Length: 137
Image (cartoon, rainbow, N blue to C red; front, side):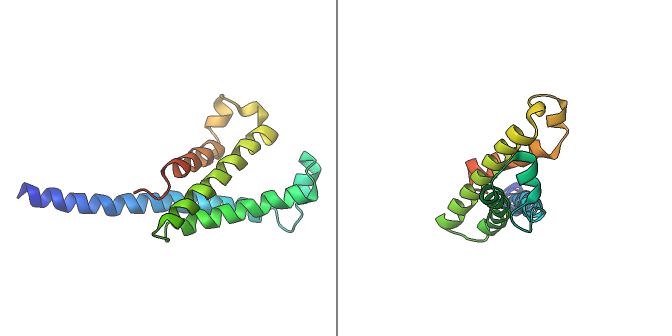
């Protein structure tokens, strides 16, 4: 009886693991799609004016955010090494974008309460998770 219950719980746990990773992936992907989309139409005037980015770089950042968010979500549905690679590459782009966001926009946030009370810390941490683990469930 215990073996049957253990097997049942093991199967349910796998389903819940997949669902929880899907929720994390959707949350991070949608956040990046929204952040990138808010910078349209291209080139993003705010990035050019506030940070002094060139029109090409500002457009590249906006497009990268949207594409990385979309491909991170797409990666879970591709059941091969391509999906795993897509997930890791998207997450790498997200981590790089977040590192530059900290450097350019939030220099005063490093290791203090502002960092740990903002959404940005979670975006980079979840990006690191998917970059390290890929599509592993």
